[in-house]
Length: 114
Length: 111
Image (cartoon, rainbow over all chains, first blue to last red; front, side, top):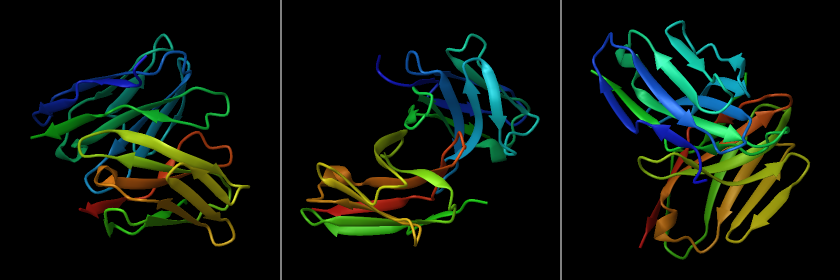
């Protein structure tokens, strides 16, 4: 296992289009997180799954955003009717333990909305 | 709410020590982390410290925690050009599932 994998690495889309990103966590990690990072800022928490259950969503996750983790393994993040303000790096992380001390991040998907 | 602050830039000469500082406001923080991000890449976990510790050393990295002042630092000994990156401080509050990050410190190592 080579770590958290995200696809695609880059996505350019026109405003108003829908986009979907995929995250494959480290095998057997039951916790999965999505973060968003805008230029010059640190990552900001979006949502968290434990197995297939989405247990927490931040206020940053507007109605246009939806995340799923249907079988408790990979996860998808969909953004509907994209806006220029959605341009950011979307980072996925996974965590191995009950205490979830360590979170390991993927390389991210860079979204550019034109 | 939580606030994590870092200075934006730090430049050091190759071979010198680097000290990156971070302050936070959440008094319930249980774990504090240092992540490294190279250009166009994700975040690499460097080290973390539990809030009841005041120091942790891992090879060239030394983390100091002053819980009273809510101050965290990362010292990199014998800094190399490969250490040039953005370093993020992050904290996890008691009972929280997610990390709260600072804005990052861009470390530039001058050969």
